[in-house]
Length: 185
Image (tube, rainbow, N blue to C red; front, side, top):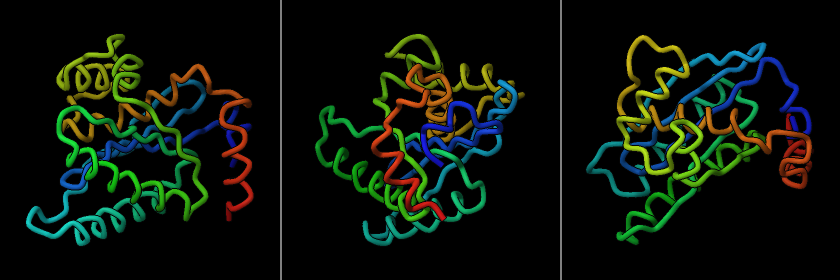
């Protein structure tokens, strides 16, 4: 499926991913007839003492199973950023690479968002706290409980960010969509 048809697809399934090598949060949100539904959310946690290669393999296997099970139309992935700790940014980049690879293997298009954009789209403020994001995600998806842990709520927020994206139209990333559509099974 290309981005050309995502805007009109009904139902639409979006997988949001908050990358990390110790905790990779995900959220699956469906849209049907203009209404959003939280389908699934959670966290993949590799063994903490595992070496990085083993953690990445654990994450790849988890995300592959998730994508195969839910068959999303698009993946919304958080962009890496460097605050203070460059080593953390590198680890996040490694987790992002795992997600990008798993999506590419399945010809699922990936849209990437900066953290502040995700926070602003869900809460109205780019500097919102983790607790505020959890609360807003629960409200917008009509959840009885606040999604936990925060990594899973962030995955749901990423999926919502895509669904709220004003670029969500046929012109959105047309070149990438054409390339991925040619590979779809």
